[in-house]
Length: 376
Image (cartoon, rainbow, N blue to C red; front, side):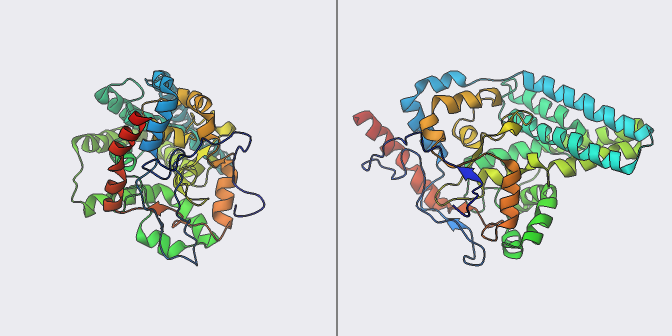
């Protein structure tokens, strides 16, 4: 615990699963590592793990004990209807502000509270679509991603799909996980509160920059769908300017900026993988804001089971409380931002990494784990 008011809790009333010391992976069954989190001012780099990411193996452990979890796999078409409602609201407000003189305070407050919240929900919908959890069809869900991208004046959905899947595949692997902060981020900002505020304020830009840097480093070129996304977004922006004016388009830009920076809903970017505790690299959030933000806080659950749509993630947790409630989890996104900013022991370097060889060696235990389970 970092202070007398921790940003996360454990459910100590829920007994942890029994540890089997003979298991091929010493982290079984919760898959908590032995590494110590990186502290700015004390450590120069990210924390370093000696195994692969924990989610695939915890998935196998959960399925052995709760095979009924597979019944939660599927899609959620209501996600498309929510996207439609958000498009109507955001485009309607863009039209209103583009044609109606209002005080600047009303403009900014609306962009923050309504537009920022809508933008955060758009991010969740694009996230669901990138996992094909809306219709189950890769092509249709890509198109739903484009459709949802209309109220974001920059092309996000298809690049996010590409890099988010890579994040799941290579979580924490140096040079392969696009979610990891760049060298300058961790070296410049450290635990300085003011710099962390500025860093969070430019987070929408950094999310794009990291992908571009990785794309350049690995010699990747934009794929067909990313090019389509760029052309589609430019066309939509032109239509919005002609219909709503530049002030309407600016409202959508402000909504994007607010929604992905210093906004309660944007705290999930910090909540998910920034290490508030030793040995645990992914954290869930269980709080009331999961309602408007479509359960995006259930991040351990999502990483463990990527085939489960957002509507059923709470059911997954309730089926396996002995696992999820004994991991550290957050209960307030406001506290996530507050603790991250004000605690000098937290910063962009508060992540855990592993090299490619370590990752592959850890993954190689999968076969031994299967043999172990068959012998039980």
